[in-house]
Image (cartoon, rainbow, N blue to C red; front, top):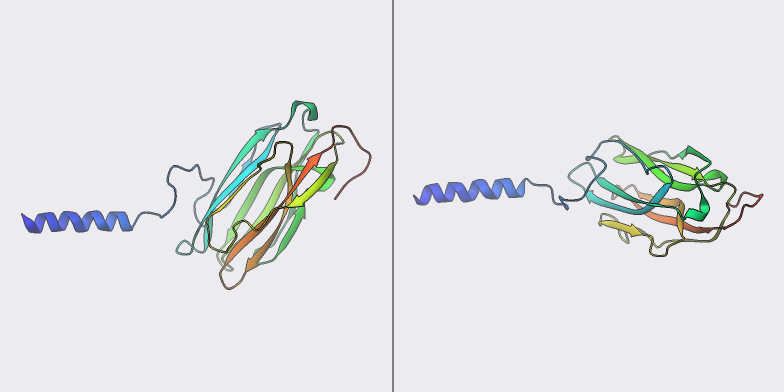
Length: 191
């Protein structure tokens, strides 16, 4: 009887230790080492980004995003496109061209460098222009940590990001570029 109990306990421990160590109820858009293409519904933009790092899974991250409709006064997006792509293993700075806002993200994993390529899906709203832009602190604060970025102030939008890559730790830290948008059309492109 004791040997059966010991066998059962060991089996349970093996099952528990083999489980991924992340939040299981999260709606991740990817599996480790897999590409993904995430787009918000039409008229919505990305307002929250969360990721979980695993060295055991190829020094990769699981990702999830949340969207929110833009204010009614901004109207519908007049144009959407995939913007510049970065190269895996490189630092990257990207702001949506044409005064666009980030409405989606796609990424492909490259096992050779244990990193991802990134590309933003951008949408322009009439001829609105960004102002009062600023960059967040590093997300995550330290490499290999769980990352969580939520726009706290309504009326701010993600326009892009700057990211650094550690070739030693095989992870990225992000600084997101947040801006307000004018309530009127303007005739210039603000980077």
